[in-house]
Length: 419
Image (cartoon, rainbow, N blue to C red; front, side, top):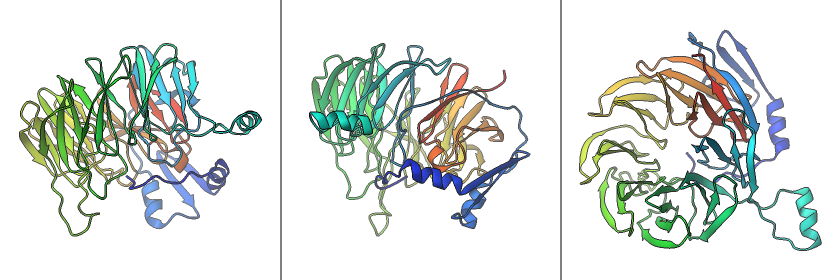
């Protein structure tokens, strides 16, 4: 997790870096030789052999624009209306056929500042100024997106035609949420907005405190049961009334401690997880909590630190901590069921439950299947080319019989496993 946005590097730089790295796979063990890697990095990049129980197959791949490059991003695909919706940070937005990866419709949101003859020339030699898309969501037959420049847009989900747009003060770095015809948008400025989803009319705004130093990221809101839930940079879980934006309650999950601002970071950058009247949330500094939805009362707390979303299947919570250790806990009491540390340091994504397994992606383009009951790694497949530009940066997504993953350079891949 970064405290600021990284600079973009060119495609030529990527090609040179790739030429300097050699990857060899033998008997399920991957070793990497890189002139610029130290011993610790080489150890992390070397995958330990596994007893594979099945072999995942790449069903199809397609490219989505320029991806997100090295920028911080949570641009995860969305599946709705039998369609897969994807976007790149630059502004390439597409609807894909989930069975084949074929494009149903496409819109380019990049813009050009020049005028006249120079606009035509710039369009030939460049793809315009980046739209800086920060998150997408789908609902009410619309696709909603927000950008780092504070633009909120709605598009027709079937055709991609623009419906409305609005400007707000603050970066949108996470997907918005929709319920009861109201679109909830959180921003990096500590301000949350409510919009009428059909027209784009701003209904309310709510401002929260923001500490001097925070992580580069925000909590994606959850809209349900008449409320909008978010985590805050001050370590609180907060619920606002969906119709008015009025604060219903807030509960301190993590408390700042330490002598420096860096040590006192307590951001809750994850999306709250709502199930059975409880809200599960986790903070960067080391607090996982189950909170009663009606009252905000903390039911239990455990010491786990993460900036990736917590996942749920049955009575199991799955946590990927900030060091890429993976845990399963009983959601009812927070008791740890198992832990898996063999992928430590590989910058794992959040876990996606898929049948009897959970799936995580890593910094070198691999998807890993873990047995949900034991935590054992039982399968893996390379989606990228063992290169930093082809890292899987957001949690894979279950779509029908496949798992869809997206890499930093814009490769979208659907992967299936044997029945």
